Image: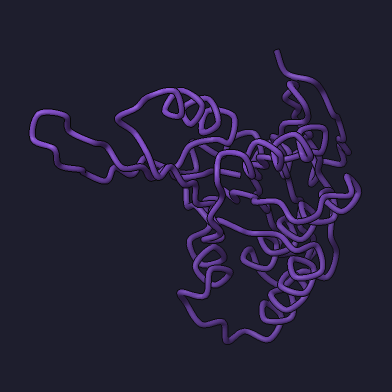
Length: 219
């Protein structure tokens, strides 16, 4: 999960105070900065805000970080769906990046879905498969940044665009139910197709009959 830091900086000469707020940063860096600020006499009222809007003191965040350190966290999900209209089949590709302890991991997986009616439905099936992978990792209560090149699907998932198609609405309901069950905080980010090559390749390989699942530790 990412955090924002807010603290009060005391100007010695003018005897005035100014509040500063950071960008969103990973928990490990937020803690490191917070511990540095704690040592300074000109920085007080340090508070951290997570992506859900919850506030934390440095002591609380330190304890929380220790508790979740060995659990999978900081997930980034890339997903893509390929579609064959003639056979009504969809090849879907998913790439998961996450951290566990001090180690970083990547999961690559694809799957073949039948009775799919459109490319957009293939995209929904891809994200649903990603959630199944998270469920297999017994993930609960984490923040996941979801990246894909389908504006329609991402906007509908984020609630920005309405969903009128019955088959897509059904997938949307299933995805929402799984997100609620796993208590996930989802961040949807649209990316260019060129930045989604790995998930796209996995989707294509699935349509070609090549099944792939791999989990590896990254250097």
